[in-house]
Image 1: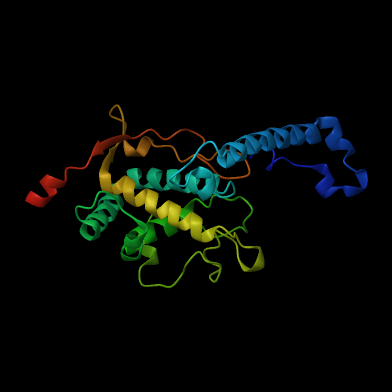
Image 2: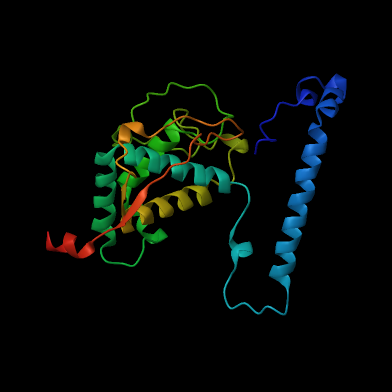
Amino acid sequence: MKLFGTFATLDMLPWLEGIMDALTGLPQRIEYCHRRFNSFFEMLLEDHLDPAKQRSEQDIIDDIVLGGVDTSSITIVWAMTELVRNPRVMKKAQAEIQSFVGMKPYVDESELENLQYLKMVVKETLRLHPPSTLLLPRENPNEFYPERFEDNAIDFRGDNFELLSFGSGRRMCPGIDMASTVVMVTLANLLYHFDWKLPNGMKREDVSVEEGVGLNIYRKLPLYLVPIIYDFEKTLEQ
């Protein structure tokens, strides 16, 4: 990801034919990463296709695509960052999830259509922390307020220029459905099963939102949270 975000003179000054990049060693670093990825993928595919390993279920090779994994995880981390900084929003999202899911062991995709407030949380996360840096400048209030998406049709599917988290038109991200589903299901289960606290008496105002440098906009500092298993019996008693 760092190499993807590295400036290449060949892109800006093609008449130099990559001479400056060769001097900095950029092509060699890219080729090195390319070889390592190829070797890694070859190992996974050989293991996946090994007839000696009779699998009754799908494995990770059946289900996962490299592109979008990083951006989805970044979005989930930013969402948890903002939720722990805004307890009101977290409690409201948890209440919605618990009201629709009930006592099921986990939240599955069939429940997502009912979780309208969680959808607003994801939209607000993408508005405030778009994972990709390759977007146009935009007006960006810093308050995390999912209710701004209540009773309006603005979505991130490329039809509204107010929220182009996945781009628009023929060049928009082809993994939009997978990414949005992964983010929603993961967040729903994290909020369904656990309450989340800050460690060591840390205050929510102390949670950093400083951004790192790279092709994608990730948190500069790791996010540390303490999961507390949600007490369903206590909720039912109340």
